[in-house]
Image 1: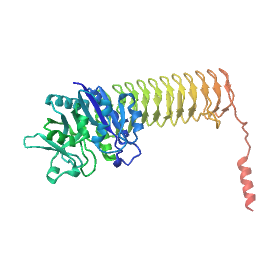
Image 2: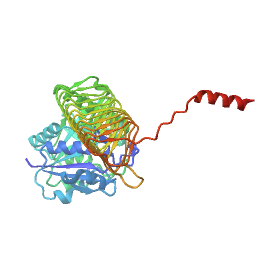
Image 3: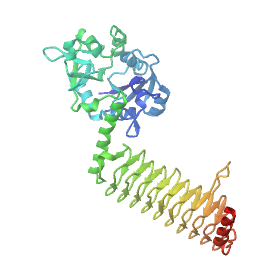
Image 4: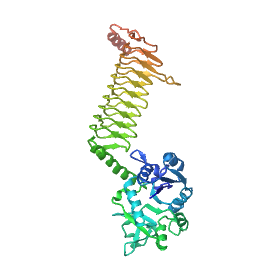
Length: 461
């Protein structure tokens, strides 16, 4: 059985109240449409067409080479949307699977079962249905006394009796490709919305004596569509719980799944412990035996084994084995930490490379810096990397010792095993093994307190 898929993704999603196309809203770090692309590909679709509309260029950039994109420039209904794929699928001899771009929970297994049921029934059309406790908003699947599907009625056009039906159309179908687009062209817009409904093709085929089948989805949550921010939150909550449970089954400890937020593409090694109120996003990879959190956020981070991160934010950086970070550290994009590095409380790093075993324990800023191995950075050390026009580098050699409250005015280099005296502002290179110190001369005024008191007394007379 040859299978092609068309994903309907042209809607603006008015109820989202957003400048983004509905299918571009993210669920667990990925646009909704990406989940549907994965599902149809996993179901065996050899060709995939995405029908884009509002924000179509953004949708096309997201889809890239995973599907062909066609445009529905006028929103004239779902049948009209599917017709836009006709030029790409003309002459296709197999089955066309139609899916919705706003159903990120649908699985490849369900779509594969739908395609298999369609083939087994020898049907012209097979609709995926669901039974809901509250079917409000969905088109109802109307069957005859023998249980055969007769038509699908949209809620706006349904009679009171039809509205009582709890079996609903999910918007996911399989169609036999030959003759499909001719049949779609015959669909009229005689309904409350004045649109060309794809659901009407079911009644059309029944009237023509063509076989129509249906398959009930096993878990109705799979086909929950996202039309507003409340539904987006429900779908995301369900998927996040699923992600966390998969991680726990793989050997990761998640202390409180309800307060832990992990994106779909995150990978975490066994025996790592995730504390509450932690957010792990993007393509983050965390090794074994780590402790992450509480209260930490990691985005596109690569962390080795045995890493400890507490109350910290790390963005697009690499963290070596057995590093200790936090509490309250901020590691900005472009940082690379070798193994056994300590980045302590209230430390900020930006585009900085730190060598093995170096320590930046507290209250420091390292920007555009290269820090060697075995370096100790005293509290309050600042790299002055920006002169108002350009960013300049700071280089600190292996084994150097930087005293507290030091300003390193870039571009500047501190040699291997050099020492910087506390409270210095260093503007020139410090040779290896040298002591760099720059302070104003200290002046002590004897009997200052007595002189100050006498002066204040005279001023008051």
